[in-house]
Image 1: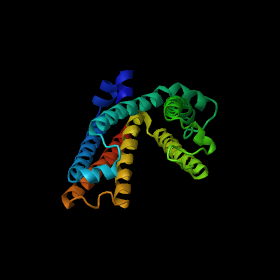
Image 2 (image 1 turned 45 degrees about the vertical axis):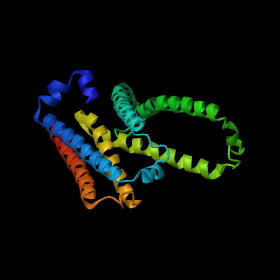
Image 3 (image 1 turned 120 degrees about the horizontal axis):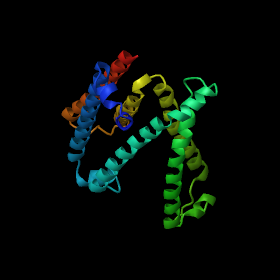
Image 4 (image 1 turned 90 degrees about the vertical axis):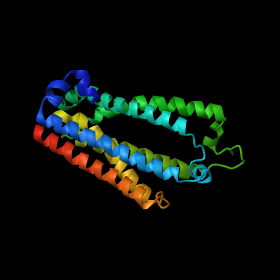
Length: 239
């Protein structure tokens, strides 16, 4: 909701119209679904012993985790705002003859360049702190083990490619959502939770959870799917 609030269209085009109110309902259902999934995760973790928690996350720190999660959520909305602020770039791309599905891709280059800078600075600081620059050339680590350079490089390349393609296809979809394109970010985040939960079950992360907890998490996923349908319907009404 940050883009329409900032550009002043929230009251007239969203809160003041039926299709906008339907989209807002979808956003509310999304938040509810996230809360339910989070509660299920909290109940699952609460049932673990301290030893199991330590085994699952070697650096478990609840307070630090909550702080990072909140900060990440705020920064995530800034990413969406950056995409919305790139509308002039999309217009220039369209004027140059780019098809409607692809006009948002130049904006990704600009927005992600900021992420490149942030990651480069952070990784550089960690390399200096840990004195691990030599490992790029195959030097052994503190335990005397040599890193598997080729597999690590290939895995990093695969992860980076997969990460980029989520935004590649996201931008294609967002280009077809008309005036309420801002809501596409909500669908994107909801999809991450839906498929992340499915992967969690596939990797048996929930195998020790009580049946009631598993039902709760699937209820949350169901709410997220419902929210997707509601938001899609609202966008369809808007034309």
